[in-house]
Image (cartoon, rainbow over all chains, first blue to last red; front, side, top):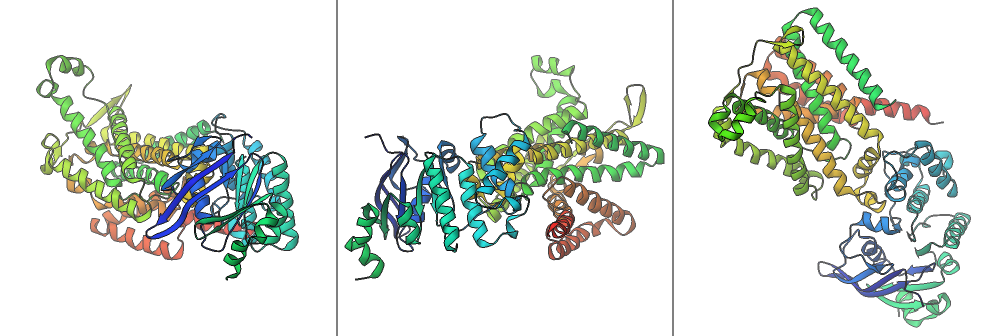
Length: 245
Length: 337
């Protein structure tokens, strides 16, 4: 078996006396679609922050393509091929939608290209990306003109723009309609077919079940289950964590 | 528009301004114009860090003062190199000294740039109001150092006697005209640099830092490195603005050089003009700078800061994004279907 793309070993993080993550072990294989679920406050987003360098884990290590990421700033991890969307959308408010995508394009994708990439080329790529989520008509508008749902789409497409090897989608589907959820899932599946591994963090079980090849469950900072979707949802400890005893 | 074209156009506008001022034959115009131009440079420099990156620097006066005191120190050294330097150094320097003002500016720019880099390295892990307080503290530390540095006059201050005229090639112009010209050139350079930054990948990186630093990092923007570049450029330009000042004013002392007016003006002018783009600080500096000069001769010199304060409060309430922001909002509203 080949080495996993992402290897999380005994990662722990506490905020004061609150243990947010308690020795998490989790692997993501090359090209895998992993669903990460858990009740609110179970540490899903903290785990994402530790993977992506927004927070530093206190114990354990995160390895990406066999390389330990400890202490590496978030921008370097993005350069290595990790990209994430934020749970609460954080668009660049003063930049147009196309320019929002231009940031990862020039700082993650074209990092080594000459100082000035032809602007038309960047613009075309940005519009192409926006078209994938149906926002191309608003390419020159500012994020403040978008609805909350559109902002989530922008958040996802900005992570995609960095051309990652592993994409972490943190609740990109909240508030979307059924058909929109289906669109996003199809989009993620297409990306996955291109070889991009994806971690999907979601509360919408229908989406998680249809998308994931494997599901991991976090509860109170611990991983309580990890396996095939059907097995995981029937796991008694998962059921009790979600529904109570 | 290409940057060199912009530079040429700005330069020709500068030349027209200079020709017009010469035509009016009023020394006062040069005295007042110099101060306005100095604030154009300071406001533009402040805006590179404060407007583009969103880091409010309260220590502008310190960078300005670094320029001033670099100039004082080098001038004093130049007046009598044998007294302060070992023989072998003094001999070589004698042919170079005294340095002309553009060379002093270059030196001041280098030193202020390095101090900007150092300050950035120490303080840029702080955000928002904490960064602002740290820059203010740095200004106080530097002022204390200068007060206790006897070579540049300490708290007594230092006199610089400037020549009355200067031969510039075939023609002789009065020294104040020369200083005005130097500052005009620096203003053109500062605006070109600011505009160049705005349109380059650096500008997009700065904007992403201003809007959301965490998201910028996640998009692969090396935020710390970019912020250090911003403090360095910003500090260097402020230092360059300060270098000719001792020649302009004739006597400098720490309390005035590190004074509140520089720090407040360099913040207020971009705020009033608009911080997102280079015309903002230019507009703000010309507007506020001229108003202050007019108030100084018509009402009283003490009323200066009052004008700044009242205007700043007014703009913060009515147009928080400055004059440029008002125009942009209007355009944005019109563009909407």
